[in-house]
Amino acid sequence: TENGRPTLNLERRLDHDGHPLAITAADAVTASGVSPWNWREPPGTGEPSQSYEGRVISVKWGDYIKKIGIDGTACAIKEAIKSAFRLRTKRAFWLEDEDNIVRTLDRDMPLGNYTLHVDEGLTIKICMYDEADHLPVHTEDKTFYSEDDFRNFLSRRGWSCLREYNGYRNVDSMDELCPGAVYRGVN
Image (cartoon, rainbow, N blue to C red; front, top):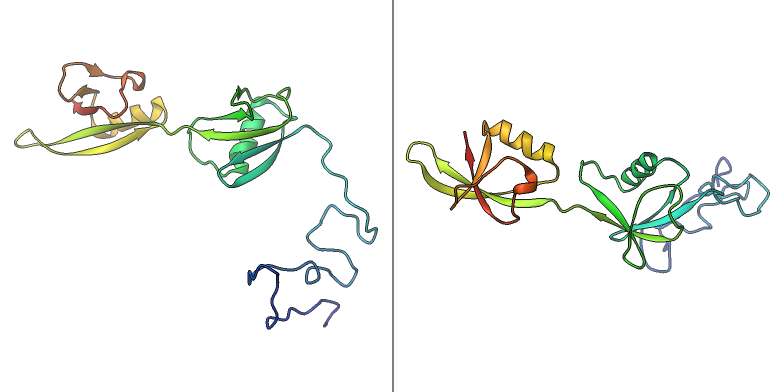
């Protein structure tokens, strides 16, 4: 080793599962005998580190599991979940416990394991017309996650509302849309 650092031998296998990028515990120990990956462990004591003492829940989304502290406000818990799972949209989400009970986000929620569910939105079909002949050309799928999404969509197109394709009912609120239905824009 040079400068007190262990050298990495790329010729040998690094783990038992054959994953070439894995680092074994022996490779990750510095000359002082302390693993650089365990930043909570005081240097040189060799004793296990203190774990977080606050209220913590375990949240699973797909293959990912994160521990989330719930010592803050509902808004802070929501932001912690969004950050932990890198949710960058305005999509609604909720937590269900192991008994499939939807839980509110607050510091008094029961400790345990939760599953994160993200709103899939409301998908409709928009019929696009040829401006000159007023004939339908094609349909496009459009998914809305919030009333703001719906309003922005209408304003970008210059439409005041949507009308059911084979009907006369005008829709000017996302709550009035029917999933999978076909609509056309109204100026």
